[in-house]
Amino acid sequence: MDISKDSIVGELVAQDFRTASVFSESKIDFCCHGNHSLEEACKERQIDCSELIRKLEQVTVHTKDSSVDYNAWPLDFLADYIEKNHHHYVERKIQEIILYLDKIIAVHGNRHPELAEAGKLFKQTAGEMAAHMKKEELMVFPAIKRMVKAKQEGTKPQKPAGSLKARIEPLLKDHNNEGDNLRKIAELTNNYLTPEDGCNTYSITLAMLKEFENDLHIHIHLENNILFPKSIKMEELMLSA
Image (tube, rainbow, N blue to C red; front, side, top):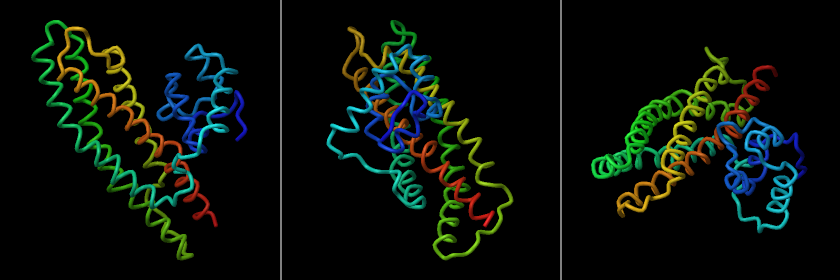
């Protein structure tokens, strides 16, 4: 894989998911803002671009290839995977995390007022994500599956009232908001570090938040960098044929 300062972050992760670990370590957002070049991302994070490229090349050449090649999956299969794994994960975890957040805010909130802000941001994200995922499950994923089926059958898809691109664009904005909120929570909690006076419940809550953010990064990456752009391109090609 050729990597240069002009390479696009999200495209690199789409081509080889092992690069995600390098970007995460360097605090470079490969999901919500994955449309930046390496040069732009390094400038924003004040990182040596040559050194980052060296690390990316190292992980793609020398690391044993045990990563999943999401980029090779059929789009209908990928949409199902996202819904059954990432959407269901969010639905399961949201209420559990809110319960834990409320507990540590009640006990530690006086000494750590930042917890209240973190809780407010997470509850806002929870509500927005619930509505966001329903839009995907009811309007976007079914349209992608119908389009894939039409291609397999060699038929032209019925021209939609609104293009996939038009339906996807608001979802990309939602992703930015969701990613920004989780990033703020990480900052408020000192990157999920339990303070000296924190209890076991405090540690568990922060660990759950960190896991939630990590899952969201993969979730948004799969949609922003693979599923959505490929679906938009497929629709455009099929309708113009």
